[in-house]
Image 1 (cartoon, rainbow, N blue to C red):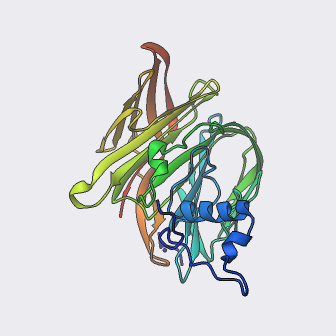
Image 2: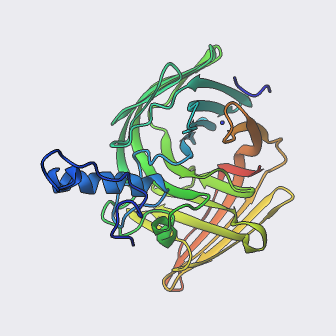
Length: 355
């Protein structure tokens, strides 16, 4: 597949422009502006580093150099999976956006790119015309001539809005990290269709997952997985991890989330212990906190992975990840030592990648 056509009290010390004086006054212009406006400006600059404030909303664009959005639609009745990914690159001279669609069965992968980003820093919105448009409750994507998605989403299980930290846990408070991860949608009522080549799929009733990631670029190596399609309709799981840092300071970091029965269980360091062993077509992720113990084991089931384009920081340059859209994922969840759930999905997304 061809790649598509990448504490300082001083404002100056904080990286802000020096205030301009107002003629006739020895008061900087910043002091004449409403305080809430200055706070908003500081918040925007802070978020541009990739970090978020406690109880902040990570869904609007930060914008970090790289920002990624992903939606996954699972249809257990018909054995179908649709993946839609959008990579926004805030290049200082040439911002650009990549949209990728992949489907099972059929092993279809299509991608396109457009100039500009259109990612809103004040709301969860994207306007990357004509490839993708995301508003409050609607998602539309057109990837070349063979993929046309139009749907409405009414979320009913999302990341708890009052939770102190988002999906990256305590790491969300640290600026300038390579990668941040936030799974935020675990269930939604869907209405719509997607046209794939000459076939049209009805997405109504699909199980839906969505996440966002951002930072200074993709990790040197990473692993990822997500699944619906269990014998419990209210179960959704996801995990992600990668090699973060530089040189001898490079360490594997990962996290996982289990949405079950209205609960959202997030295990990320340092509040939880998470380890992953990935290779030879298998993914084994374990995590435990004082209350929860989770184990996930994924296998590729012999299917060939799809090569999905991964945008790099330089404009219109790509690497690739390898992803299985219909892998097998066994999940076991314990709470306070008692088994809460054990079961398997055969429509799991399982991925490895590196740049």
